Image 1 (cartoon, one colour):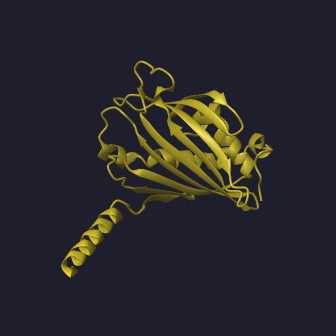
Image 2 (image 1 turned 135 degrees about the vertical axis):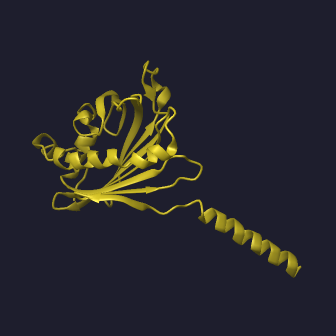
Image 3 (image 1 turned 30 degrees about the vertical axis):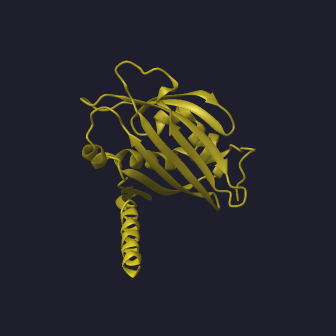
Length: 216
């Protein structure tokens, strides 16, 4: 009986050890201009998951107004050349975005369903987006991004300061090898967040007061 029990415990410990190996630590890839870019491996996935953190000087409503201003994405989102809404409501939207890539890489596009939620106690906002590639027909000559999972965590700190954490995991589609995508994947979010820091300061955003969003 003791032999059986010992064998079972060894097996259980082995299973737990394997499970722990499926969770990878974040690795800092770039830190500059107040922006931190982290990456980690994802089990069974060729592409890294990214985490971007930054603190911005903005009201919470102003920052959300920027993130929901889809047609303005080409002004600050890296390589985005076109973006527009299909459907939009207070807490939910469907939108399209196109990204021009340098030759010989083909351009990409993306269709996203995003949902906005706020914790009424902490005032923290989660803005989650999920790719829905089949929502509209593909455009000839452009590769539709087949998998996308992105989310913003917005934590108001008072004194018009907001901590941003952005998590994103995607498959760019096509024949791009995972090692190559991982090598350059943090450049886009870095450039986007550097631009966002100044872009959000515009009066049209900072004067926005969203009735459904509570600040601190």
